[in-house]
Amino acid sequence: MALLLAAPAAVAEGVPEGILLRPGAPIERALEAGGRDRFEAELAAGKHWLLRVEQLGINVVVEVRNPQGQSLLAVDSPLGRAGAESLLLTPAITGHYAVEVRCDQRDAPAGRYQVLLEELPAVTTTDRLRLRAEGALSDAGRFYREGSDQARERAAVKLRQALGDWRALREKQREAWTWLFLGGLEDEREDFSSSVASYERALALWRQL
Image (cartoon, rainbow, N blue to C red; front, top):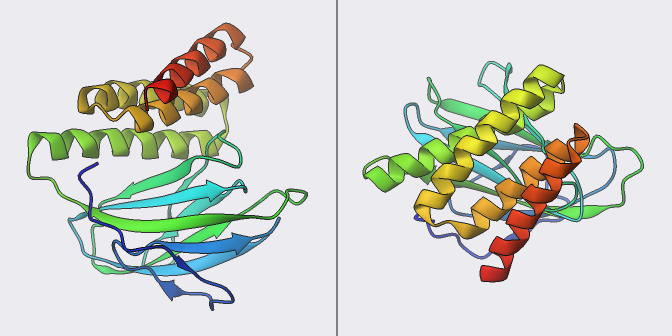
């Protein structure tokens, strides 16, 4: 993806709550069941910010609050202890935004995660297509997190939109993970024939990487 180049991941141990997220500088943390970490990000209004949390052996929920402390967006997925939770934010006001990464499962094994903040451009047609794909994926995570049958159906629609954009962008890895998200959603809805087909699409893409 045509994103900002990331510096080597910093492994943070015992970092106090409210650590500042800097664009392009990933932070890796350990997390236990029921645990939560808090970060802060200074986000400029009108720009497009992608927050990605790679799950490295633990299933997390990611939530962002605006400068007034109100919940702005919370996402989750059925990917379990792997894959990424991603949020696309375009703030209306400049300020400090709080980011919380937490594991709501009380009996989950401990694991790690890596959080990365990036500013995405919106100059070229490719930039705008990528923004649309990231936005659809972010919406899917939000709808999945809501949990109702109607919301899960809306998540599936957003995932299918993202799949078309990843295919147009030739982003095979992102497309594969999105197929896994869709397959997990279909599996939870007991649409097993569709979930198997989605998993097979993901596997075919992984074999090409």
